[in-house]
Amino acid sequence: MYHDNILTTYRHRFKELVHEKQFHLLTRLALWNHDAWSIQQLPLQKEAFLGGTTQAEWHKKMTDIQNRTPDYTQVNHGSARKTYFEAYPNLYGLELAMFQALHARHHFDADLTACLPEPESIQRLIDQLLSDPQTLGALSTYAIDIFYLYNRFLQSDDTALIPIALLKESCEKSPSVQLAIYLITHCVIGETLFYNRKIPLQHQAYYHNLITELNNLAETNWQDLTLDNRLEVALCNQITNTPSSLVDKAVIDADSYFSQEYGFIIDPKKPNKNTLAGSEHRNVLYLMVVGYSR
Image (cartoon, rainbow, N blue to C red; front, side, top):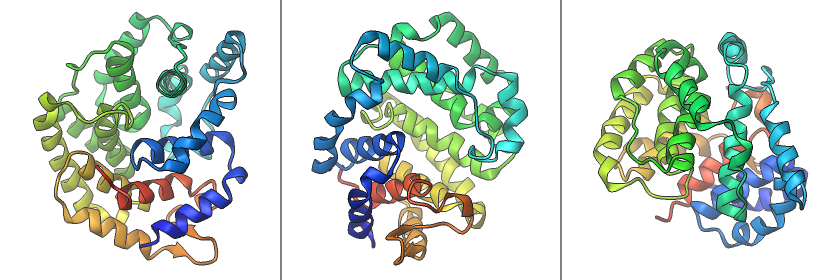
């Protein structure tokens, strides 16, 4: 395993990452691995994350985030999803802004929820998405994230769940098995409020059933999955305390693509994402899975 090598690389080259990548790395390792260095670094991110030191600056950044649009050269399967993003032009920026509000609250005790659209409009968007399995399958994580950020974070509602039959249909209609995998993994991760909590006891049976669907889909299509996919499947098995051979399998696969030259894991399936920054998501997942401590 290359946990220590990768952690050393990203710590030593931390300042080469843009702020968004720095924050992603620190929050995941702090919340999941309880990494002391990441916990110490997080408070230093406050001003850059919020966009300044005043409420006016924070609100301006929230507005700027909500106005963002997808870069289809960077979004996974961007060309296949372009039509769906265009049908919901506010969805991309909304998802990012909801994450901004979540992290501001959890890490910096700042409340940015007043900058978000009215709850009724977000609920209408969710209702539209859940009524269209094909769109849900294409938008994948962006749609699922909004569902969980709205219900679990903004509404403090622990009851809403997406029917598993709808998720299965959406996976079948997704333009890519990779997006189908992410559709399910983000349900699991979303239930944890993105690593801020454990899955509530009352929903463990639901997520056990969902993990069964995820593992069946992953095993059937393993060779078509990216390393990011495989590691996220492994992580979701850990989150749900599900014993699975896929955890070790994902780690072994990732180990085989560790680059001695670069000091991190690359993926030949994603040649445009094998830089330090482009590989950050994959390598953080690896660090989380291998460093699992819960």
